[in-house]
Each structure stands twice: as C-alpha cells, then as structure tokens.
Length: 245
Image (cartoon, rainbow, N blue to C red):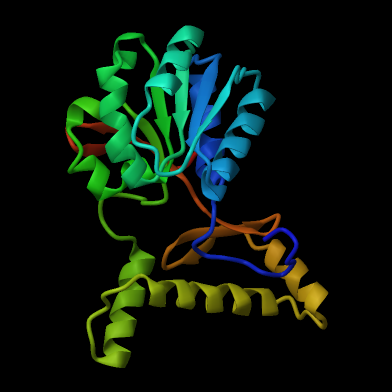
C-alpha cells in the first residue's frame, strides 16, 4: 500500500503496459478513448496510467466507466460506450472478466462501430488467446511482458539452475519471484547504501534489470516489467514491437 514505504511487490499492479498502449494508440491515430474497467486496485492503476499518458500526448478520455468486480452483464456499459462512439476502448481486465465481457462486445455490436480494443496483460494470457472464440479477440491490441511466444533466456537459465540445485522440476512461478527479489536487492547493495533510506533510493534507481520474470525497473515504489505490444489474431499473438518507451 502507498502508506508502506519500502515495500515492493513482484506480482503487484504494473502500469508500464498501460503507458505503452497509450502512446501506441495515439500513433495509430486514436484521439478519443473510453476506459471500461472493474472496481479493482490493479485496474484502477492501469486506468490512471493510461489516462495520464494518453492525455500527455494529446489524447482525450471522455469517460471512465467502472463496473463491480465479478459483474457478468455489460449492456449498460456498452450502451454508454456506443453513445459516446470513441475511437478506442481501453479494457484493463483479468482473464476471467475477459471471458465474460469479450463475447458481449460482439453481441452488443461494438465490433461493428470501428472501435479499436486495447487491453492489458490479461488479454495476452493463453486462457484468453487460445480458449476464447477468436471472433471476440481478433484485432485486440494488448501489452504483455512476454518477449516472445517462447521463454526468455533469463528464465531458461534460472530454471536449469533451480532444477540442478534442488533436483526437482520447477512447477511454479513463485521461485522465480524470489530469485528476482534477491537479485534486485543484491543489485541495490552494489551502490553501497549505509541506511534503509539509501537502500531504498538505490532500489528506486534500478532500470532494465534482466530478471527471470522479465526486464525489471523500479519506479515510484512499483516494480515494473518491460512491456511488449501484440495484436491478437486467429488465437495467436503477433508482436508489434519488442519495446515501446
């Protein structure tokens, strides 16, 4: 939480993808983007980051529509979007929300209005890309921390070292989080901090650290991973760029 300085999470909200999407949306020529999101902390962080970045480049966010987390019916929200008729729709959703909401985008005809859908990392997860009907996901532009469809060199090296040391198969992402946490801590210690405040300042200066879970940057109390932009098409991720700053 904001009131706990010096606390960092490797699995907490990460606004870097939302910022990259905002820049790319503007480059695509989108001038007005509506935000539709659940009432969760992660979605709120993404929405704030997107709006701040999009407005900074000249874009307009005429409406932020918030629905209760766990909602299953989106007709009122989509009717409001249709009345505004924006160029784009930013949807910072988790896979469960996407499975429920994406088919209703098609059902209520938003796909016929020329509105570009923009999504965060949840849209690039396998349970969405592979399992949700492609009619509801084709053309969506999303931000993901996955550099390719395959595993990164850093993760492969970590997994090999882990399995050699513990003589068992790596079956969880939790050890990689622990490995990266230790790596960030050791990186900060290279600056020779002599107090907790100096250590925190050293952590906040870390940029593009090659971790097992991605390339990590610490900024304003958040650990963020390098975002990559993709377009979903026919149950596959088509990479638009390797990096978008």
